[in-house]
Image (tube, rainbow, N blue to C red):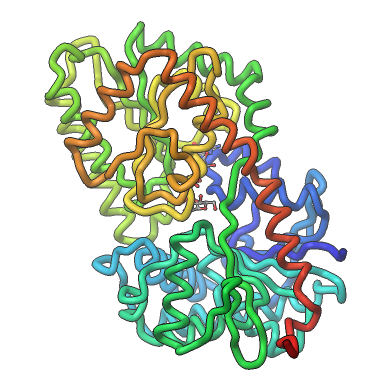
Length: 468
Ligand code: GDG
């Protein structure tokens, strides 16, 4: 098998991941993938340039080769802040109320996808597997095909896939999805998103979907499948046992002086349900006066996509809400919500997870959610904490032994917090053992293997229909 050419919006070298501390799930997973297989990780450097030249900055760090390009300010505005994060991200998270559409965004998106294709094209050798990631780059495969790339090309989408009715509100949605059918493999996180995708191609495009979920399109067979992503369990459980993690654990425990700890760790994003989570915790405190001053919510929320207005808005909303709730429930020696807008190195994070009695993972919509899996991996199996998980996270289809909640229901989440804090050790251990088995088995290496297998199994030059 040839190398892997991974293409994603941003590239993140392993050493930088820990230091920056605010890496998304994509970065964490792909570092593991490339260390395993070798190859090149291509993407935007995060830097702006006066005029796009296509110059490739090649580097090698900790066994991973990266190639990056700089983009023009207009590219960043229209493609990244525009079509990717003002149009597709909210739409794919069922938020048509936040979905903006502007012709310039669409044009910028196509222009940058062309620029990606032009720049990565010379790096692709005959036997390489090309693996494109996420909503920023949906049409990239079709552009590479137009340039004559015959390699196997796959897409993995880290977000949900929205219901057909919602997607149909996007101007030119047919063109976008048709461009995706140039991939050999389209990977989604869960069967729910897969079913939505297949529904779209059947209902909107009139295509035939075979029993194995492959799609017949212009004489080719495109494989569509669910590949639920996992964490690097070996790496993360190692980090949880490190000295750094132990110190972080102790520091957090000492600081709460015997109180119960609930933890949330999320990029600051409206899809993560942080406002509803804070309200639920507040309701829990109001409904359980006996718990007054006895439980703390630590919310770690490194800011992201700060140039997009809806992100500035959610940040302001959360600041107001935190102030309000803390004002109502605090005492001279106690503040109920510790709301922290910064990232921490992974080992420290692991220590915090382990110190927490409850992991609160309550997104309103999430492709998968790796924090839920990290929380499970970091627990002490002899005295584990309880995971409260949104039924709307992709992870809920795997982590069935978590306490599943509807994050929109403040009452339900408040009651579930109470149940989690009262849960007897025996039940905590039973639930944790079942969760851990799933997190361990369906880890990132499993995900990687399954995806690469599916991608390399496709006939080169993209699957001609077999005569049967
Ligand atoms: C997308 C999809 C899907 C967060 N704060 C810190 C920190 N993080 C790390 C977490 C976790 C990652 O960021 C977040 O991953 P999630 O999966 O929870 O969410 P997204 O960023 O939205 O990721 C998601 C994922 O892609 C993978 O396919 O699961 O559904 O939306 O790893 O630990 N890391 C460090 N310090 C922090 O303060 N070091």
